[in-house]
Image (cartoon, rainbow, N blue to C red):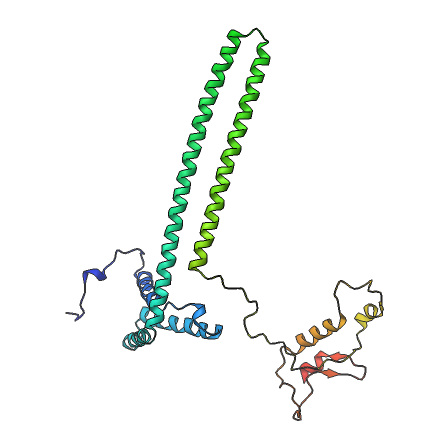
Length: 287
């Protein structure tokens, strides 16, 4: 009656009580299979953010039933234009999932080996205690020495053997952990590329085109520091010029003024400076 074909394979068990949440999860799972580009697939961060915004728009339309035919056509066009990179990223995801599965299997085997080793050590320790008790009884029966000394000597030998077993078991654990660490690092290097970190990848604006630095300013706050030629009052690497430059940059950061040029128009100067060379931020803001 509704004219829509329903197939058994399209039905899934309900996970969430809210059907809206269930629909959104299904839509996002479907979208993620095709829109699987990564940051390294784009020349810059802005292009990657535009791509993420496009994916969110498509998901929003499908979740809220907005322009569904146009959105489906948009998805089909994207699939045709990016078939190669979609397949490549799917293979990457499969390799990464396989790597995680192998990693989990290795960790499970190592846990089983550690458990077996612990059981073996506990069994040896129990047998050693039984042998020690029997040895003390035999020595007390056959020896004419002091019983307290015999017991103390036997306990000391037992403690030495226990410490030797503990050191051997700790060496085994360290060997297992180090080998698993190197195996995981080697496997990860083959699956996930180790991209070097580059700080401040965005286009940082220093506002240096909105003011001009003078050689000196009338600044009573820094007079004592400037007169200190020996550097007693200064911290390591402190420069008064950097403090002036930072104050100027903060002052012009919120001003709606044009950048400086060779032939500036008839407009107020970026910074207001009095006859003594001091900066008046209030006048600049008013301008």
